[in-house]
Image (cartoon, rainbow, N blue to C red; front, side):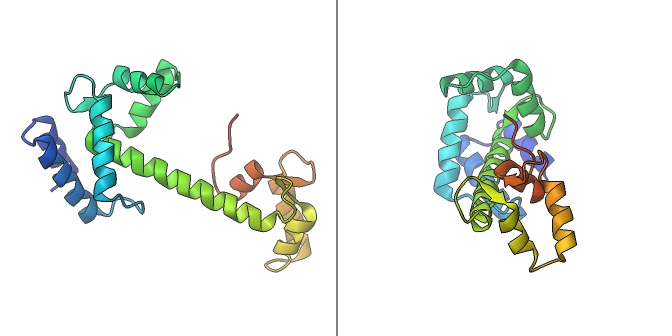
Amino acid sequence: MSDDSYTNLSSSKLLNSDDELEFMKARMSLSGESSTILSEQEIELYKQAFDDFDEDKDGAISTVELANAFRRAGHNPTEGEIQDMINETDTNNSGQIEFDEFIDLVKKKLKEREDEQDFKETFRVFSKDDQGCVTMEEMKFVLCHICSPEEAKQMIQVVDRNGDGKISFSEFRCMLGANPILL
């Protein structure tokens, strides 16, 4: 069954919430949509959260409902930030987040958290002195095993964006292909 078929079933309310939950489980297991696999208990937990966010119980989370959910959690995103979140998640262009889109968002956020943990663990391997940075000596030691000293020097110059002679965690993440940490 295509995503459009699911969306049509869900939005037309032909499925009750239990059926929708079972359908989502089957859809996710068949599609292999993400490397992040959610257990039945996790899906049920996220369904409860979705239902809590869906204040008017219409099967979708609107911008107002999403903003309210963030405010209840102690965050105060701007209207633009809320709209950006909806736009990034809303695959069927309804202007709202349906349950399948919500699950995709949860899986994406879980994957980002896993990636971040991997970055931190890898950073710790490079940073032997626990000072929150990788020194040039530490970086050269690792790189000398995979490239020439001149190539290592060039790589370090590219990665060390602020030129302080050390690789910060943010610079390290970028080196591994992650988006920069914005403060």
